[in-house]
Length: 316
Image (cartoon, rainbow, N blue to C red; front, side):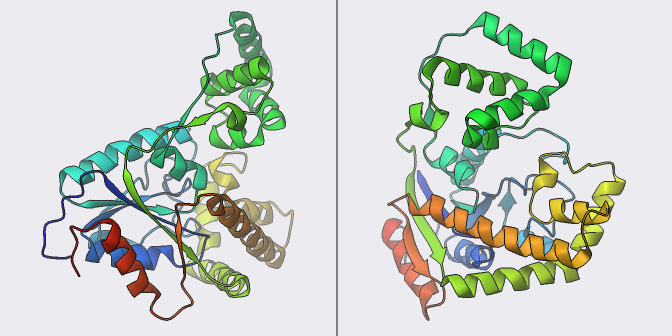
């Protein structure tokens, strides 16, 4: 790390981009250069025992640079964007208190943006009769019914909330019922409490898709199937939110005889390519992101200059 003490204050570095673009390698280099600590911005890395498919930093990488918000929950435990926001902001404050630069690195746009800006919902009065009705429905038919109802009305809100988070699912349904609009249309984006430097990584689509396909093959070689088998043996079923993650869902289908091994690998590759496209679409909406093509020679130096320009306490 740089020998100069870096007083981060309200500074926050955010590195985003599609899966397989190279965020991990770059983040390790930036953290070493800028006295940073990495906060995972991936919604699935919070789960224990899910290492290969979520592309967690290796033990050696974590020994090199402090990593946060990894391995917080068992795969059958509830986790929501609200909890992520709370934990991430708490971690940012702790990292800053050590005069280090907090770095959120990942590709789950909703989670990251909940930390960098957050949202305020309109004041909607509680409806006791509606809540009673929803609670009775969940008691009789299961909480998944409420989550499915929310998904039908507001898929984006459903993606934020775990099916077991009954209280927040009912509240979301209550707001939609009152306003007649999805939550995204009635939420107000808060002003960020941080001084943020955004870095977005990209590359030509054909190159990215080739890297995705190769990465999936590498994960299989590293033991992704064996990882899924262990999870199954531990009692984690494919109905869990955690098991809907790319790689896990498809291999669960294979293990249950619903597709062949080659079909499962092809589905993982195809699903990951589609996910990368959605990630790029999400982040392209944020004008504050400084985009860098990692296929260009000297891209790391370009990022160094941009970060140093935003955080002048660092001197190259």
